[in-house]
Amino acid sequence: MAEHLNRENFKSTIEKLDVAVVDFWAEWCGPCNLLSPILEEFEQKTEGRLKLFKVNVDKDPIIASEYGVESIPTLLTFKGGIPTNSFTGLASKQAIEEYISSAIK
Image 1 (cartoon, rainbow, N blue to C red):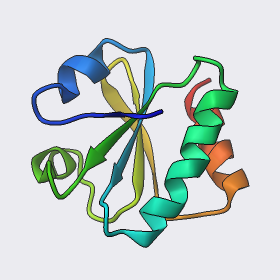
Image 2: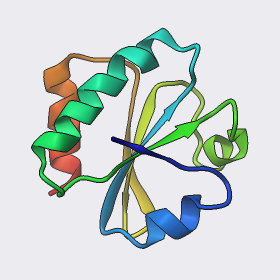
Image 3: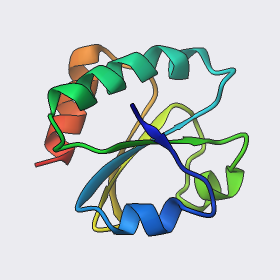
């Protein structure tokens, strides 16, 4: 299950990891709620190669602003604490899995 991050722990957590995917979302966002189970299922399939995190943009809008997140859901991939690419919106399960697979290579 994805760990929720906030301003206090975001950078220190992300910087420790080789690769992380952060899901920027909100409780009221229908597409975000449809995306969550897809992400959690894929995280389990990767058997530890992927670490998934969530940031609630309503509770922590500064983090979203710092990384240019303007629409949700947005997935940001970080390598060594640096954002490397992003995926915005809801797409097919296959498209989401392909994005994440390429991100964790």
